Image 1 (cartoon, rainbow, N blue to C red):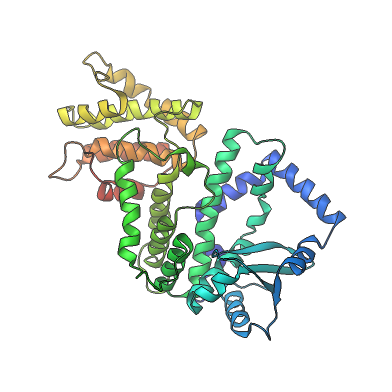
Image 2 (image 1 turned 90 degrees about the vertical axis):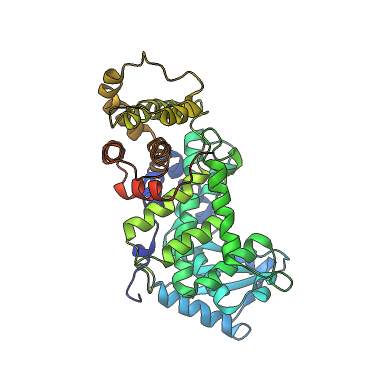
Length: 405
């Protein structure tokens, strides 16, 4: 466990999207502007912190500094810290981009007084994780709040990346805390503002919120609302669920789940916050719908016979009467590779998974009592290969997703 590096802990989607966004001309231009401002005023962050908050020296906060030192060692960091506190009834913490070789971490007074030691270690590790993974290299706040708005696709990519960046930081925090129960309580407190004095925390009940979200999103056309798309943080229950997957994985002390299955599980969770492509008006949404149309028919016809149950699910996606005997299945099959290529080229990995998730619903339509057949699985695997998604995603989705009402 101790030999794991921060790179090994990092969410794969965070790393991939980070590298892609760094190549964006908009991101590069904003970073150039920030560098110029920092050169003109090199100590602005520290000056502001000293003026508006209290610096917590090792003498004033020995336990907090000890926790920070333990997190620094766990994450293999060398950058020295300065810790600050500011008065606030809200639980909050933040890490600032280093200045003059020092990293600054600030905590709200209520968080410092309302969290236990291991809960605080999770928070400290989370904030340090943002630094370790250089998340400040993507200045999302400057880009989204700037005078010139980014194009919609870049904006959605920034929000999606930010949510995966939080997953990486959460893993860093969990790695430091080594206490999943404390980590879960910390996220509950951050989500609710409650310290537990009058409310008894129950992990199973907290996680049930994710299951309820999944059930609501299982109906075609009722996917994530717009406010989800533009959220920089995953919902706290999703974060706990993602950390539960992490705790069960080979990246944790006693976990058994493979790294690949961990990442697939997290991707499935994050897809709950992606836009609904069935009603989208973009070229990406159109390409996804076209692939769903063809793929659903190929999956349904995999055994040579399209059942009434499969037709019913198909028409839930595309409307009553969308399935007719006049559909040319041979022509549709011949066009499948091209439709897969269009989606793979235009869509994000999470969007590809959305299409595959919906195709799994079709596959399960007439298999309530039995396993999805080998023929249908073969078509799903072919589609997964075309979209560069692992077969593990198909298996997890067939195993775990709720049936349509």
